Length: 289
Image (cartoon, one colour):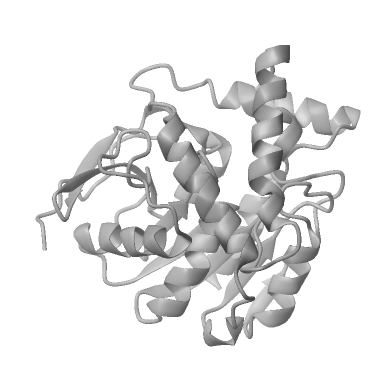
């Protein structure tokens, strides 16, 4: 195992100022940031499609890090991480496990958002001894209805965003109501709070690989979730147009030890960002129970 490249005591008080570090995973450097107390089971955050370190809402990270060691990282070939981006969820899951092992952790909790939730499901199923608890947000099971349409929705929103000079996350993550738009704009402003040493955006080849992985996940034979025996907290908005909210209900119904949060009203794919205070409170209660 490679020697860890991190300080055992995260020094920064907020995600906005957290240092970007790297750890070698089988010869490839993975970029990551960490925050929060050094003791206890670490919480590993698994990012959404096209996401990099700077796409995590600092209110969510800071809120969780008030009580837990929180670690975010760039997937292989994305942002500050080296290597070539995998085009299957299963390969991303293997990378996540290797990353955790490279940092020397024997047990972790997982928070998977959207595509990161796909990855979290595979890791939890394949590594029952490594994963203690799981939080799944804005995500769904393999073969879930509408998931195979995520790539097309993403491309459409990106093209429209380029024409209107509007961040595609505004339409993809939030509802079109006045409250939804207001919450989306507030979220995008929070993502700008970090001004130094920002991460690189995902490259086009890496985005293509991830889009392929998501489409494959959406077209797979539905997976048997009964093998995931860890406690799982499931969250989403009531109007997720990327990973339709019915997938959230399906996840909760099929996971043996799940707890479903009431779907957040007038919220979509970015519900945990829109309702960050409520989500952090529920997540901390779940992790500490």
